[in-house]
Length: 178
Image 1 (tube, rainbow, N blue to C red):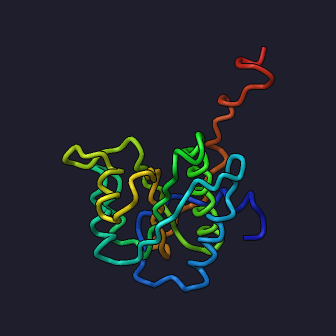
Image 2: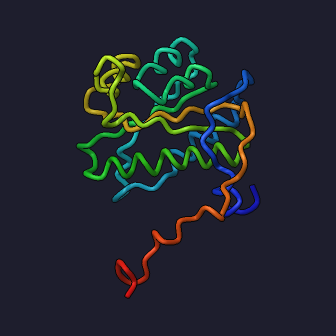
């Protein structure tokens, strides 16, 4: 992508993927983006789990009651975790890493979708993070923030239409702008 403005307009959540595998270079670029994401006081409280095993992806697709089933069709997922003992702003650090992965995916022409795990539940009422911990044998001190589903785009989506920008949500100098 030549311009960042075009990148953020074209990045849309993708829930349909083709069967085409990712190249080693694409996976490496995604992980570099995650590892270069900024963190508070350079705490690097995050850790990433790459999942490309079809059976594990199918299991993880049940991590939430709604909004994760498409994970079973993704080529790969990156589970974004962080250690709350390493940083009091682990949620923010892991969130930044999650969006960096998504922007890198778009720059590579790949599709991605954020699956929120923190504060979500399975259909049976189990905390989604606990479910993901069990599937991937994640150490207890790490909290799961999100899963980023990634793959080659299985459909085209129009870029974000700037006509829909909510300028009324912007305030100058103080709320209300008066």
